[in-house]
Image (cartoon, rainbow, N blue to C red):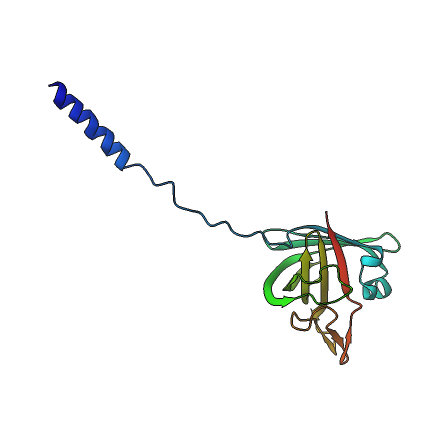
Length: 177
């Protein structure tokens, strides 16, 4: 009887052990998108084209994991304008080769920002991130501005074209907060 009871106990233990779930399945982590976070561009780091045309003195850009963004732009009169929308980005095979960049050697990403507020617009461009520094160059592509072409990963920073001429005045430098 003792042997039967012992055998039954061993059989029940084996049954419960055999039915347990396998928790050893490896989970591959999804790499964090390097643009996610809050970035600040102020003073001379703001693109020259924005400082001249829009009197921009500071930009705080927040990119979220859910592919939404909020950008607060402050002008020389301390008036804030908030831009919101969604973005898509793609890693390219190109790296930043601009000698004056603080992201030289970093991977270039293509980005499309679909602005929903304060008015609909699309900006297209590129960015590169090296630690807590980001180079960022975008230009409005919709509504279309005649003669303006956005920068490309293949063209690198400074490849925004206006009337057939490349201009580097739309490159911004950001520092991650």
